[in-house]
Length: 246
Image: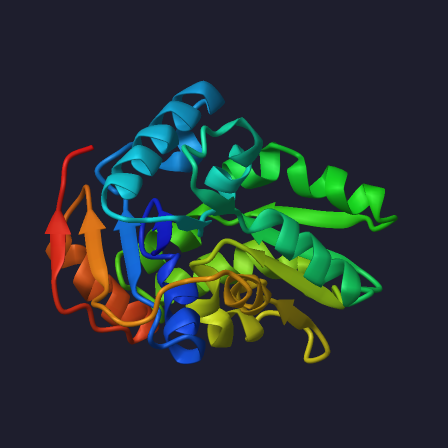
């Protein structure tokens, strides 16, 4: 069974594409908002937390896992897979962005994602210089279901101003596709946004996954908030979300 995890609802952007392209594949989605934000955890703490989440998902039938969080994906090499195949978002994002052959590449992401240097190092190996901006406030607003407020637009303008003339901007957080129309207001008309989720789903397509069965949604946080935010940000209606303790 396919599992998707994220600290919050950002991974719903991946879930949505999975259902559009692989509709009969059942998914277990876990939102870990009951834990400290992944981007604020030290690496040892984050690895320990993710290993506990992986153990929980295996007990619930997950055999293949997509980590729909850039901060969490920085720890993939250090995780105990426990027999589960794990795919993060970073390798796919680098590949897709490099294939676009950007004249000038910008990136917006969470604090841990940017400060880890993982993207800078990966793009440097490809001969690509990347200009990065921490966009943590956007993630928080989207997580609350806000995709259009004046506050969101003010933050987007501030964050994107140094990147406005980049030929390409990588969305290094799965929340950001929810506000791409807003982001477009503050960059050049020629700027292209890169969302690696579609290419990630192409990898999932190659896995031998069962078909048929119901999707399951877990959260360690507020189940009602999860459902509301998924609907407001990604137009995904979750029938039932179960709160769990991990």
